[in-house]
Length: 219
Ligand SMILES: Nc1ncnc2c1ncn2[C@@H]1O[C@H](COP(=O)(O)OP(=O)(O)O)[C@@H](O)[C@H]1O
Ligand SMILES: [Mg+2]
Image 1 (cartoon, protein in one colour):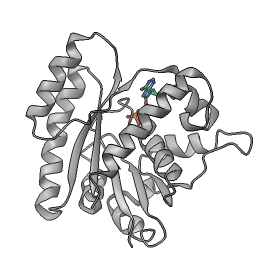
Image 2 (spheres, helix red, strand yellow; image 1 turned 180 degrees about the vertical axis):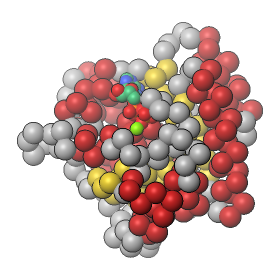
Image 3 (cartoon, protein in one colour; image 1 turned 90 degrees about the vertical axis):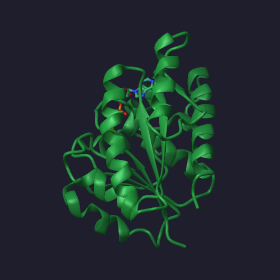
C-alpha cells in the first residue's frame, strides 16, 4: 500500500506548522506506522530539530529535507511512498511559491494550523482558495483547521472558531494550547511523547487525539 500524505500548511510563519508536523509524525510512529517526515521549508526547522538530540533519545523516525526540490517536490516525495505508511510534509509558509500547491495535489489530508490572531485568519482565507484549487484535480483531498497556541478564556478563540468554520473546512475538535513543552521538545531534539514532565504529558494527550482525528479522515 502506498503511503498517505499529510500536508501541514499555512500561508504564515510562526503558526506551528513545524511543531505540528513533527508531532503528528511522532503520534503515527507510536501507532506502529512507518513514518517519514519531509521538511519542505527552506528554513529547515525539522532537519535542525531532528539533529538537536545529543543522545539516542532523539526523533525515532526519519526526517528528510526536500526543500531544494521546489515545485518538483511531489516527484521526490513519490519516490518514498512505497516504503512508508504515512508521509507528513511540513510546507513552507508562502503560497506564492508552488510548493504547497503541488504537495496538496498529492496529499490525502491538509492540516491548516492557525492561532487565534486575526492575521492567521486572513492568511487562512488565501489558503482555502489554494486548497479548493487543489481539490479540482485531487478530489479526495480533505482539509481541516487546527487551532494551535490557544489561550483559555479568550473570547477571540470562540469568534475565530465560528469564522473559520464559515470558510468551509472543519476545525479539529482537539485544540493545542500554548505549552512550554512544545518549545522544549524542539530544543531537546525530541517530541513531547518522549518527555516526562506534567506539561509534556498533557501535550502528549493532545497530540495523540489530534492524530486520531486525522487518522479517521484517511482513506
Ligand atoms: N502549542 C505551542 N505552545 C508553545 N509554543 C509553540 C506551540 N506551537 C508552536 N510553538 C512555538 O512557536 C514557534 C513557531 O512554531 P513553528 O512550529 O516553528 O511554526 P511554523 O513552522 O509555522 O513557522 C516555535 O518556537 C515553537 O516552539
Ligand atoms: Mg516551520
